[in-house]
Length: 322
Ligand SMILES: Cc1cc2nc3c(=O)[nH]c(=O)nc-3n(C[C@H](O)[C@H](O)[C@H](O)COP(=O)(O)O)c2cc1C
Image (cartoon, rainbow, N blue to C red):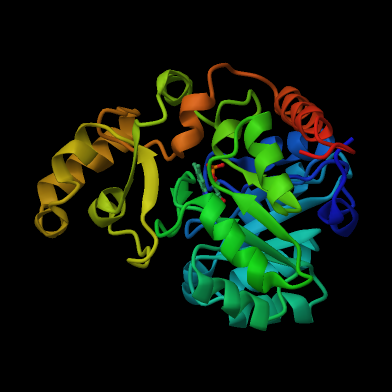
């Protein structure tokens, strides 16, 4: 079985961390990932409250396995109550990403929690290292959902490994098959932080229509864009666009962001589409690896396939000189 330093650190069996995915991850998916030997994470976003965090956490820890809570730093700036609400749950891992990292890494570490940070640039990695983060997540621009779109996963992973010293580095963005997992482990990553492939797992909260679109999408069908955030008036910092499936809304507005920010009509059209689940207009956040997601499976089936396949690939070279 694949075993790395993050397995020991987090008390898990395989080096797979289920990325926190706001609104579509949830306690059920997190519990399924943890039950399969990985670490499942729930996400908290700006519509969450201490009560909703407690509810999701209760579901995630139902099976008594380690689990994590993923937070967005810029949301914590507006909702400081989420820091205490997270500490109260005593998760096995907290992640802080997308914003000023130092303050929150320090607060969670002071509370005795283990902390990971997703980083998308050298500067962000240096900030997290300086704040004594426990796990660095090198998240490349091909990843789904929000994050910097500055470097691809493999380049970023190499850059972060060079400065990480003894801090374990986990790779995120575009990992969906045994080949991808084997590649990042062979490069020196201590695990993979995976989001997009779990969107199509039976335990996710993805709607049936969004699920079908995910299964049909090709690797070139995503775009890293700010248009959904601009139209919704979401407070995402400009450095963190979101990678989503391309649709009529992105085709119309990507590249015309200023005009979009002044269009009340576009905002109304998007809000209505979100309500009715019309994904020609509404967003489905997903990364480039969506093109590798071809069937619906359980989280356990996915984890078994990706870890056993990666192990077989890595074993091809064990003890041999290439
Ligand atoms: C639908 C979706 C929602 C996400 N929500 C969050 C979130 O709430 N917090 C967070 O830290 N990252 C979030 N992410 C980013 C993931 O943590 C991770 O960086 C990404 O999924 C990794 O790339 P992959 O999708 O190619 O596996 C989200 C990703 C997706 C696809």
